[in-house]
Image (tube, rainbow, N blue to C red; front, top):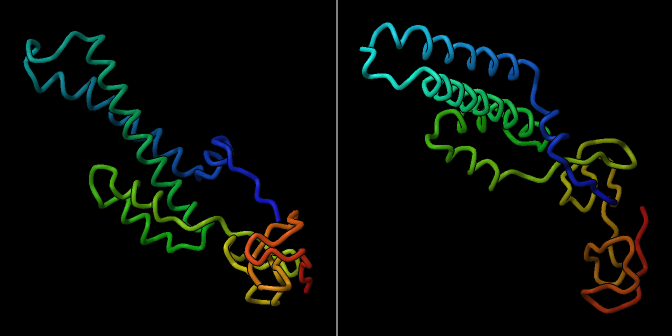
Amino acid sequence: MSQSKSTFRNEVAVIPAVAWWIALFAWALVQFVMLCIVPHHTQPKELPPLPVWSLIATTMGVIFGVIILMIGYVNVDSKRRGMNSLLWTLLVIIVPKALGFIAYFLLRKPLMIPCPKCGTSVGSDFRFCPKCGYAVTPMCAHCGRSIQADYVCCPYCGKNVAVTAT
């Protein structure tokens, strides 16, 4: 069973379209507030020059947009991994200073994979499919521990590999 490595492009593709639209709206809203509303409610001497102020507004808009995209990513990715998506999404939103994001990326489960026999989603650390009993990972017939399919000798018991097939 080989699991392909995820690329950044594949992970970005997971983000739902609604998150992209909300992020774009948030960016535009920040631009409007920073460039149209804030200058009318402050003294001209209190603001930096317009090019600098525009750069600050753009940077703040991008930061808010990225945060929204990451929330959308956590929501969808937690579903892919068989985790409680509502709980993780709320945790990421509520916990300050990006600690929710850090906790998610440290504690998330491995991606679910389809069972080769019945197609049921199983954890990549599962040895058997819970629906049909198929051996998802090869096992040594002598000691019963999971091994890789290309092993000639079991690294645990040292015997020649006789892979069980179910």
